[in-house]
Image (cartoon, helix red, strand yellow):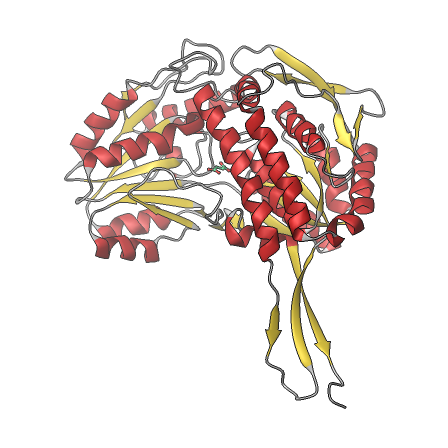
Length: 485
Ligand code: SIN
């Protein structure tokens, strides 16, 4: 049951269990991408306030990590339940601040909640080892210990779920955290902070700082107290963080850009493949790291796939996510619209055919039409880089060897999709696709029990699943000698 539709997030930051302003009284605006309206002004924090958040997390660490895992799990479960209690108001806020359709926002609240519930249980399963000893008078043990204070730097495209996916794992392992949400979606992060406070999570255990990415990022990265950084965002920023982490030798988890291939083999179920393509491409208006970004269709199915895909795309409504029947909300900002436009123009100039859409949408400044491009070639920009917009480029292929080579010829390695009914081919493709996540006969794969993450320039580390919590522990080896002497 939704308890309070009038729930609104505080417009202040959350440090050491208190709601604070910027020291200098600076603020910045959270803007509705559908209308351009200012939703609220929130604190624009800098280095000093970030330092206070780090100190608060450091002070809270010893008490938090010495509690039992099941006690920490109870806090996380309560936190998750509160997300459920406020589901509708959280969904409305998400649609206003980020733009995605209300139905997807409700889905994201449940997705965010699922990480808190998952890690509420996982903390109690952080088993160590006893190693058969190399001598008779010693015992060798392995323990997993919380790494300490973590910085969690999160993106705007899933502003609840990307926080809980990191924070759930960090807190369950016994770490404390400073969360830095994207500048585009501070209110969603502050709403979570409010619910975490209501769940009774002790002061300082997690802190939320909004404001300038560079000032806050630099302070987090240069601090020796921060032992771990988890970041979701672009590959360029990820590479910068790797270099900034060197001076203090931090542990990193990086979930970076993708450029997912979506392959339809000659034996695919065409209707299933078209439904999967719609889901994979147009979720969040194409603004997910795992969105299909290039569609390789076997030449024997190309025309019929293109026709049915265009038909389904024509049924998608573009508009404000708060309106019923909207399937595609706005893109996050004008720069995102311009990138989509650039990819379409470049492809068209080089000979691609626009089979559907192709332009900005009449719904407003940040809206772009769902777009289908045919006869796309490797030389076109859209086959070389992530679009992060609602554009589906179609490419013909004629053999498995060819499509695997083309699918793998990218520095990225996050997610890859393919459709085939041949079990031999399913396992062959699973082996040969150089990606952290390979998805056969489905357009979506994300859930709390599966390991999310990439290879190559898409980053390292895994989130969710039994692996996600391991990103927040150090392995400690204990030798007990003198036994029997
Ligand atoms: C992302 O785009 O980074 C996350 C998408 C997901 O969790 O499915």
